[in-house]
Each structure stands twice: as structure tokens, then as C-alpha cells.
Length: 90
Length: 231
Image 1 (cartoon, chains in turn cyan, purple):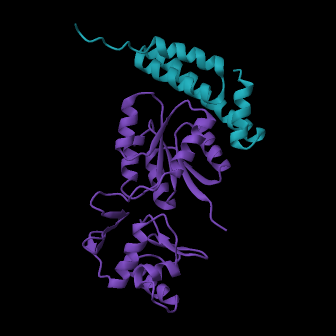
Image 2 (image 1 turned 45 degrees about the vertical axis):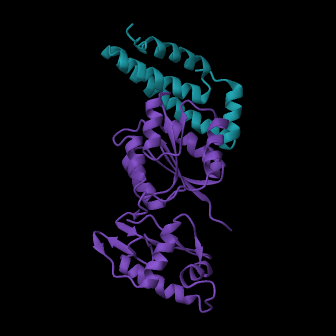
Image 3 (image 1 turned 90 degrees about the vertical axis):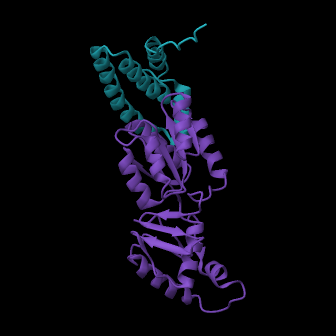
């Protein structure tokens, strides 16, 4: 997973420095493994809503920590499994 | 020296929980965390935080239900974290007593700006429209000058009730002994501040408060007293 440097700098400033950020990123990587496993399970289940929710969780974590490419891919996946709003009948 | 402001972060995703806690720690908060709604409520009751950051999508007791339960005993600022950018989450959260919400994923500046704006607001009036105040097992009806503990009406003297009424009316405020004397006895009363300690001791005894770890009338070292969250 690649991270956006500017985003990481901003996070580091907010959490008290680079070492605090590194500790957070280590925890995020563990979360990421769980989120990917959840997505795999969702695909196995074939439930569109489960896939959408798993993709959303993946996107949320990735965007929060500046994993920009991963967040973009997860956003596309989430959009694919988001039902279109129903149109009012004429 | 003033004691640090307390915050509670209730979020089930470890990295998000740690991130929010770290951001608030850097803002000077003394932060504790919980990973589900039930343990979050227990911590809130025990620690009486000034700010609660509450995720909507918690396992078990969800964030909206937890917020509603929190409002039964706390006037903390509540900032909800919503995973979905849907109006439903926001409306449910605000109706349950939240002060504001942030949609995940959020940027650090956005989160800190929301927290800053929240803390600049005046505190909400405690809790109930009819002015009934609840602190765990203790219910205070100021209009009726009545305090009920575990369903039993307490036999309080006028002074004891006035003390309890003053403290519970602004539960986030630490009152000095001089302030309490002014509130309860009036501005023209001059006397020994130890008088307060005698009445507080009697009040605690009637409330079943352990003086070493009181749940209702808490000692604020070097200042005086403030209301606790109860038990």
C-alpha cells in the first residue's frame, strides 16, 4: 500500500510527530488486513450490500490514512455496488 | 494548575480509535477509549468526560442508542462519527442528543475544527425539558425540591438540598467553597468555610457516597466540589 506524503505529514503534525504516526500506521495495516478479509468474505457471500459496506470500510480507512490509490479503487467498488436511487413514477 | 479536559472516544476500528485519541491528546485532552457502546457508557459514567466522540456504527449497542443513553446522565459535548454520508445517520444522531457529526473519512483539520467549534458553544441546559436532572440512580426535581435515590425520596435539609441543587444545576462546573456559600447562604454571609464540609459530609452520607470515591459530590482538590455522574 502506498501513502500520500503530504497527507502523512499533516497526520504526523496532528498526532504529535512521526513516531506516533508510525505506531498508528502499524495498527492501520492490521485493520487493513481485516478489511480486505471482510471484502473477500462479502464477495463469497455474493451479497451486494455486504460488498458495498466492506468496500466503504476499506475506503474510509484508506482515505483517513492517505492510502489514496487504495481509497480510489475502494470508492469505485463501493459505487458499483451502490443501488441507483429510484426515480419517481411519472 | 487546571486539570486536563477529559474526552472519551468510542470507536470499534482500532486505527480510527487511536487516531482520534491521538488528535485529542495533542489538543490537551486526557483521553480514554472504548470499543463498543456498552463499555463506552460505563466509561462515561465513571469518568464524566467533557467531550465524547462516538461512532455511529458500533457493534452491539449502536452509536445512536448509546448517545441517547448517555444523555440520561451526561451533558458532555457529543461528536458523532458517521461512516455513511447519509442524512438518516445525521438526523438520528442529532435527535438522540448529539451536538455535531463528522463524516468518515475526515481530514485532520476538519476534525479539529469541528471539535474546536463544539467547545466554543455554551453548554446545553441539562438534560430534561422539565428540568429533572439525572445522575445515575439519583433523580433531582428542582421545582419540587425533591431528590430521589434508587426510587426513594431522600430526607434532605433545606441546606443540603440547596447544595445539591447548586452543584447539579451546573454539573460541569467546579465550585469553590466561597462560591457555594454565596449560592446557598447568600453574598452577605460571612463565616467558616468548614461549614460547607460538614454539610457536604451529611449530604454524601444520605446519598450513600463513599467519601474516598464519591460518585455524586466530588471533591476538586484545591478548589471545592463538583457534581459527579453518579452510579
